[in-house]
Length: 372
Image 1 (spheres, helix red, strand yellow):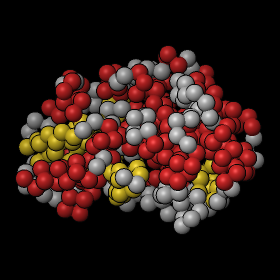
Image 2 (image 1 turned 90 degrees about the vertical axis):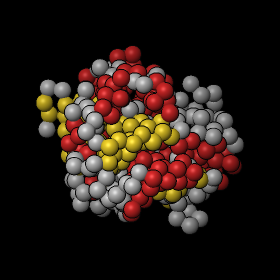
Image 3 (image 1 turned 180 degrees about the vertical axis):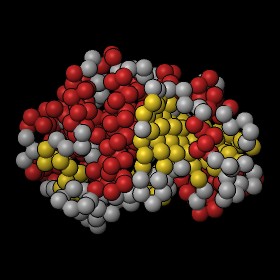
């Protein structure tokens, strides 16, 4: 469903909801919140401090409700047990009930945390996501994955909890630093490789400087990436496996993420998620080339597509042995067997289980170098 300035993408399944994409979408928030009297808005410190008019306009749309603002740290620092507990305590103090609603207003980390707050409070209350970064729009806000980090790794504690609705207001991207917008493109390009080659064509034929929040091309990229995620999630919400034919189901969305999460941990989460995904995607392309015969031209296309938008495609910031140890506790691993989402070709993901350490090391050596 589309009108002059909005697109509504429907997510089917047991708990259906809509993802609205467009500009100046504050009017959609009251309807998604519904008849709840209490609303807890989880927002990172940076958005509160900057007092961005667009972001706060969304909050002001809830003027008739009892709104509690829960401020959390920026970035991955928000995804901790201590911050989670602080949110629980605040909800308890406010007398938050099953009929009340959590709204997340922020990037991917805020969305992950806020979703888990909603999933765990009273065993589950409704949540509406208002992502304010490109990464959150195309990744964290859709699909119901929520979670926090532990000392052992990223997103190891969490729950599946689908939102009641998602508002992707592209106007909110106008204050986003360029490097954050570019980082969000990491997940977009990934979607091109696993499912939608048209995304790659758009990236390869559009001048990077033209990929701005007001650009029709960026909007199409956002909508296409969200559609990829919707299609995968509806078919396999809880990552139990594909529908046959070798497709890995929801695990396909983790393309590049096994090494990416290891790099994020090694870099103490200073590196942006989309940057790490770009590096991890080139790594698994190199791995698939060695272990499963992925054509060399597809490997090179990874480097050119991610690199064209300004994302890194090389990494030498941590020893291979350290990264390998972290990858061994990745959520896709089964016992002692490492499993990677790889490609047979563009748009054809599959699982590579138990690659040799020789192939892993060779693939890592192939991406060594100074980051872009």
